[in-house]
Length: 188
Image (cartoon, rainbow, N blue to C red; front, side, top):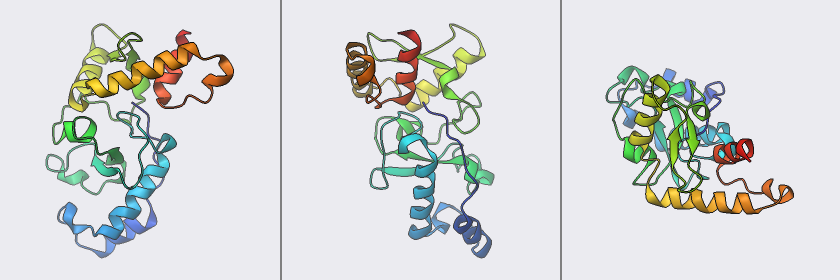
């Protein structure tokens, strides 16, 4: 998972909210949602899904409410509650759906890399701690987002093999999973 460093809310989004009565997510038209998603993608590391870290674009992403809009209607239009997320139907926002737990790691408010490590043999993402609050937060987040779904574990495992076989000059070009790369650099 990646930290999202939010920028200032785009003026178009602020103006749209000021000029229109916002009742629900359908109150936003397609054009403003597309502009918003473009802005969200730009503030995310290398235009990656903050949850699974795959590269995303306007064509293969959607706007994700970190705190679900049906459970937290006051956060429906809160720019700090919005990220752009991949469209995979088995993980990330699609897996999280409208579930919520206060232990969920919010990538806007916290640095997820402080909570996770990787199993270099399986590609699984794991809690850094063996018990306690950080362990609970990591486990809830992994479960909600289905971050150990088999396809993503296999892709991580392949990346780990490539990374560990590569010499230092080649490792700089292996950027598929930024947090995994940083983790491997620390342990190797």
